Length: 248
Image: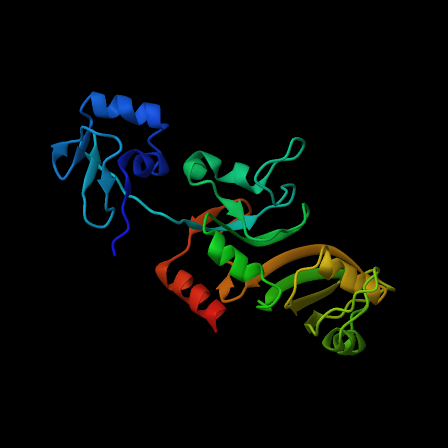
C-alpha cells in the first residue's frame, strides 16, 4: 500500500513554512498538484505519484535525511544546549526543517565522523548495545603504547567505575617515547559506546589521550575530503551498505 500524507505536512517537511504559511500559499494559488492549483491544504498526497510544485518549482520531498559531518572540536553532540554550540548549528540553516539529531555522541573536543539524521529506527539500531556496531578512532596518546596494551585491550580492560570493556582491536601506528615526549599514534576499534570510553581505556593502562578523531562507524567511513565542520548527504551506496551491514 502506498504511503499518503497531507499536502501541508509534506510542504512543511520540505521547508515551505508552517501550516498557516502553506495555507497562504494555497490561497494565493502558488501550490499545484499535477499541474492543477491545490484547493485544500489537507488533501492526501502520494509523494511517489503526485507532482507538487510551488511557484512553478518542483518540490523534492524526502522523508529521511542522512548527513555525514566531519565534526570539529568545540561543538557538543546535541540538538540544543543553552551554553554550548551544537553540531546541529553547523547544518541548521539548510536542514532545519528536517529536525536532525546526532546518532550517538562525540565529546566536545573530539573530531571526526558523526551521522546526523531524522531516521529514529536506523539510529536506534546503530546505537543498540546488542548490535556491537564497530567504531574506529585515530588517537594521539601520551606515553609509549605497545603490544602489552594491544593484548590488554583485546582481553578487555577495567574502567574507573569497575566496568570491563568488551574486546577491542588496537593498531599501533607509531609507538612514542616518554623520554622525548613523542606521542604514540594509534587506531582503536571498539564495539560499544561507553561515556568517554576511548580516553578511559587508555587511562586504565596508565596513558592519556590528547587527540581523538572518529574514522568510521559500522560500514560508514569518514570522507577525508570533508574539512572540519563540513558535511554532505550519504550516497545511496553508503546508505545501502550501512543498512545492510546493520541487518547482518
